[in-house]
Image 1 (cartoon, helix red, strand yellow):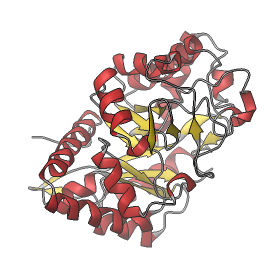
Image 2 (cartoon, helix red, strand yellow; image 1 turned 45 degrees about the horizontal axis):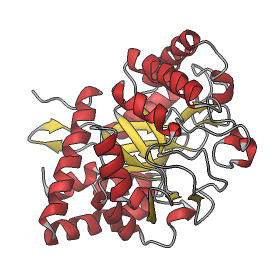
Image 3 (cartoon, rainbow, N blue to C red; image 1 turned 90 degrees about the horizontal axis):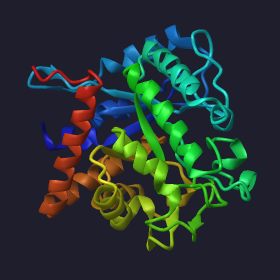
Length: 340
């Protein structure tokens, strides 16, 4: 792979699920972007979505005559967060409702939901939500509780039901993402719409990390990092830019070996005080693997900054190579990479 192709593997760009923008697709192609997130709200159904996905899968890079397939993801949690709808897609209830079901029921339904995504050409679901929202906070927790995205208010319920959701998806051959590490259950503000979101409660030993720990032990292929600040873990960095959170806690203490993906670093207000170049370099330097941006216009600056830093810093270059290997491994497991 060329350097540009390797850097492209680290990027996931958002594209409208219903009406892909050709200029945005061109940015992805020109920057060798290896993964796509379907965004917005589509009511087109599985067949039409599959046609859209197949359309841009053809632009994936070739290396030594072999196509390195695109990884295609979306946000299909249920309730207020369900990108793909219409014929062939179930109306998924909220996380809180799913959390009230017996574990076996959720696993069975999750396997069916995963088959719907598979039919639409999607490899990766950016779910389940592993955040524990205390009952006392409830809907005042704007990113999760106000949308009823949590499976419950105790680590036990969230652990059992994120596990069932992930197991159902694995059974149907669609990958999942535990999010938003180390948890958005204790915050008030939403990092998508608010700067300086702070969790002053969670520590490296909090019971609210149990769903993540259990999911990692069960083999979760992806973990998404939050863009809040955790003052009792690393008061000096957003989690997405924190080696303490990613390298020490997630990789070291919890033993995660899969792909660390960012929460949105394109549009989120939480990262607005950083340039796109700084966001990309900071995330990779902290130990992250895949940069999610719902704004493809930020990709050229991100890709260029990573390439520049690779040319200056051998340890950063080694991090990039490790990340590319993890991502290609995930693609291989998803059937998007033929190693011959």
